[in-house]
Length: 150
Ligand SMILES: [Fe+2]
Image 1 (cartoon, rainbow, N blue to C red):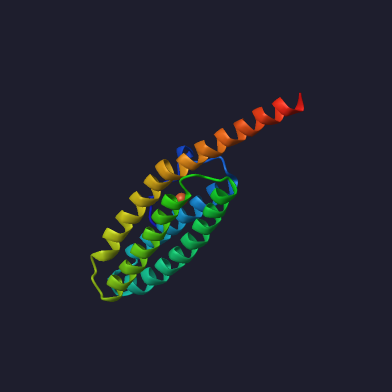
Image 2: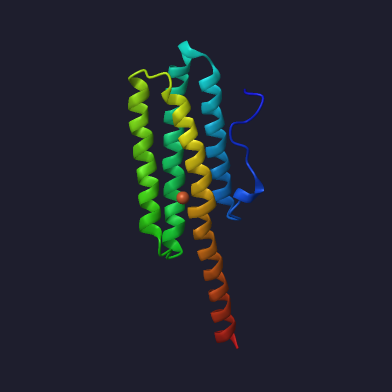
């Protein structure tokens, strides 16, 4: 375990949706696990790293499906664009895995940098857009409910 975590979770990343927040925290933990694997040494790094990358990709897919389902249920108007971003990210991860298998020792560090910036900006911008949408929807439903209840 590294002395300092590569990605430090902050309250500002919280969406307020427990399922999503827990999954985001797990993605951050897996990214830190990848960083630790990267520090484990040149000979073993690739094997550890590839295993950790596969674990990350599997979990990311699971998380994206859950998030997309939630967006579908909330009739989120940017679902198609959001899903395209998820799909592109997964595709990039799988391509990078192939690069790593080719044995370029610099790739894991570049990959980690990409991973960290993608996750943090995706949570802060794209996922938060959905959060604003669902909060606004809840408010509208509340107003309609009160209107028809009276
Ligand atoms: Fe997302």
